[in-house]
Image (cartoon, rainbow, N blue to C red; front, side):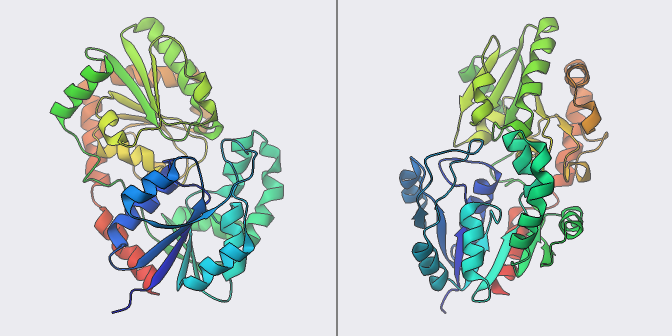
Length: 370
């Protein structure tokens, strides 16, 4: 039987490991036997070694010599894009608002089945990333036109679908909820003891975060809150995994900044509380990974987070509550009530464990098969 050819398109790729890259990696792992998968992605330094290890077929796009936020935009080469589109039966665009994603959509529309995934609310994310909220109104009609060229948009929840529809996007929608890969992200007390010893944090209260270190993730608020908390709790540590423009802020006593790690599941086990203060999100895959690892969470209410974190399963803060004194108070609640916080974490994990990556892969398979 001839396998259907699926072209994965993204403006972000290895060695970056953000939510979109992790999603594509998991999808490839589960579906590469069912489909002939090829990637059209930016050529970033260090990518070729990873691609070789993962045995991926890749078409590279060059990048511009400047960055927007922490992104180095892809420089679309039309001949290369057309050749990639001609090869494919299905084009799966993971960054429709990016230069490579948008260019591929316009090259493939009317020719191939075009599927996108609503990983982000681009007209909210981009203004946050560059620190110019005022341009959101100007960007929305541009993104609306791009997204409306997709045949189907996959989205993690009806709430996100409704947001896209209110923005005027005319495509068809299909809900494909996401979750962490529970085969990787899970509790293990022995592994926890080892990684805490390796990091030198045995006997300390570890506040953690992992993900892209950009403005919309509210990294400054996390750091400021930690410094206030540490004045009263000197045996506390802030452990941050990931990279991005905000990483330069991660200096000072008690702060451990690892940069990019290929195995965040190991480091999550070291954490006593996971603090996620993002201003704009859809599913927040990194938060799901922390929950799957059994870590108590303090989180904002951005995007779909309230659908799986409530006051019974964690501490959830409204946008108006994203202030240092309130964040510090929330972390202190976890510190002072470890048993209660752990029970909440178990409740959150039970809820998120109701859907695994086999289910997600089957939904994606049906979408690709049309």
